Image 1 (cartoon, rainbow, N blue to C red):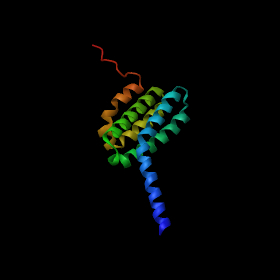
Image 2 (cartoon, rainbow, N blue to C red):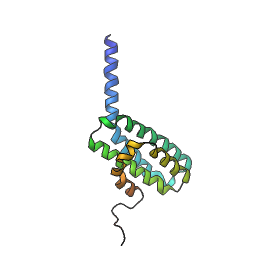
Image 3 (spheres, rainbow, N blue to C red):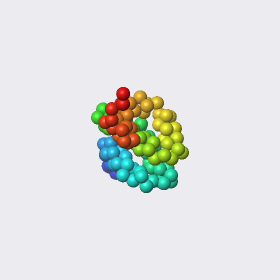
Length: 131
């Protein structure tokens, strides 16, 4: 009985810390991809997209337990990642990310917050529209 209680407590702590670290893991992942994107092959992009998909799934499952600031940060990272992928020029990779993101209606509801990240990802952050 005591062992079961201890295992339950450890599991709860691990799961709780995963949620706490989710924004940091998104940030770290997107930063790493951004640094290496110029040298990525299509295979590298496929691996990155698989990890991105897992992170987004985790975000969707835990979104209600995150703070508004954490959700804003993650959606910004998602937008930034989509922008980085768009710059990659690999049509199959771009289509895969677009297809995945389009399947998630609740993500699309909050993705507007990530537009700044998208613009940063494609190198247009801070630019004003030309008249």
